[in-house]
Length: 315
Image 1: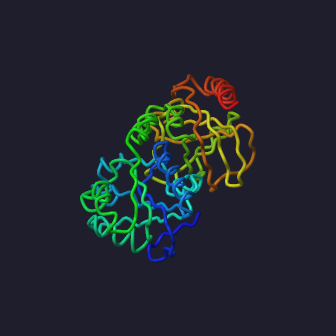
Image 2 (image 1 turned 45 degrees about the horizontal axis):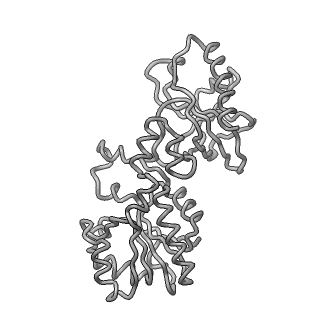
Image 3 (image 1 turned 90 degrees about the vertical axis):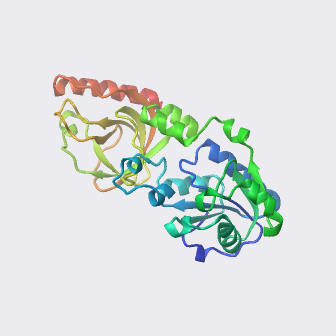
């Protein structure tokens, strides 16, 4: 997949089949649209093109960064994760359109003329139902279909029932993750929910009780971190090795009071130094809620049970 981050660098394409959207999560509903995009591209012999936006429009148009509404945005994908998923869907060209306040002021006509026609040379447009574009979301399928002949491209809307048939929305996925229901989130996404971070130094208490943990600092501050609790996950190192792992998201009540939340993962079949390296987690199962134990011996005994449960969940 060719990735273009500046519209001025977009190549001249013939017979481009195009869709656009934020595609946060690239969930099963999005995958229906992308599958149709690929199908049309194959039928007409043109490249499949996706236009997406970064940063997220709400980061640009929403309240100031400290505002609680913005802090609750919680992305399902980092940009790199989104790019990887779009590549897996068979997209040939991806334009990561810089979302600025100036771009947000484009009228629907400017959006069509400058982006769809002048930049991408769209010949076939595939959009999801209720797709809106342009200033104040004024453009949509009705406007496009009425004027498609003037623009010189065809336009197709994925029916609402086709997308709704999979019962998926980004809101439902976020709700499941905030409840720790990673299995439901994976079912809606079509893949296990990922979380990538850099391994940072912690208190190093885990190694003293036989369960050394890697403390993770997410690479994207706005990435949604699932509910506090203990999870079975797969952990992939920067070297590409994949390990069964048990994960704790919580405040470590056995260790002390009023501690900050940490993300700590114990790789069950790994020995080595991961500090300052990237680690990617895939959430498979919720095991239990975080609890306070009467000392480290009780905590260690529970971790042994968690390790068994992790292996069973990942078997």
